[in-house]
Length: 265
Ligand code: SAM
Image (cartoon, rainbow, N blue to C red; front, side, top):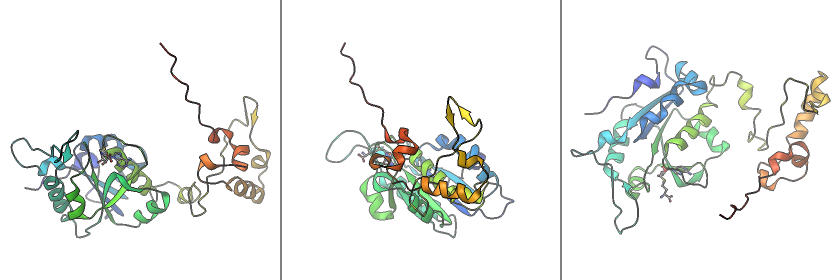
């Protein structure tokens, strides 16, 4: 029998209109998403019915008394591998729950690195189904059978796909109409259509520890403010390769703290 979705903390209200974007997350640790789906921006978007987030425990599709979902790798080697049958069958069952088949994504360091351009394309979808890996990763036949898009959130290794799934959900949801309070907010950010970084922001106080807010921002000349901000956006997106204006406007971006060698014992 198909397990029922975890509506308790997804917060989806049945009385509201269809959410603009539905996420189905397949994971071995659904409760890792508890506060993520109920608090802050995502919590409010769920509450308002803009998005829906359903969590599914892959283990519910495991066979046998022990509900095994992982096993040792053929050919030897360390760790365990996520087995194909529970994952494939979970995806098939969850997919069939909605007439919209959705776009399937597996979170894996092998995937293409997520960027804002891809985020914007994903935000056009009506339904995204996300598979979170664990252990050493997925049995390859999961990819061969389901043909998901493989998505990485960066060139480093985490213990599971849950944090990457949250990264993707949050980045995508911000672009769903009505999720951000101010529609302009998403258009005026780093990595927008210009591909550049955001201009610096200031708020009160006007002076702090001898550092003053740039005069142009205080004068109320909107054209001058827009020009100043444009000039401050002429920055390459990668701080590691930044030269010129970036060094002037925010030197701290350009510096990585040195890693000191451990003092010998
Ligand atoms: N053995 C795998 C490798 O070398 O590529 C790493 C497996 S990792 C410990 C376990 C799971 O965490 C992955 O299957 C994936 O779902 C998730 N994961 C870890 N790092 C990730 C990243 N940078 N992007 C997306 N998912 C990641």
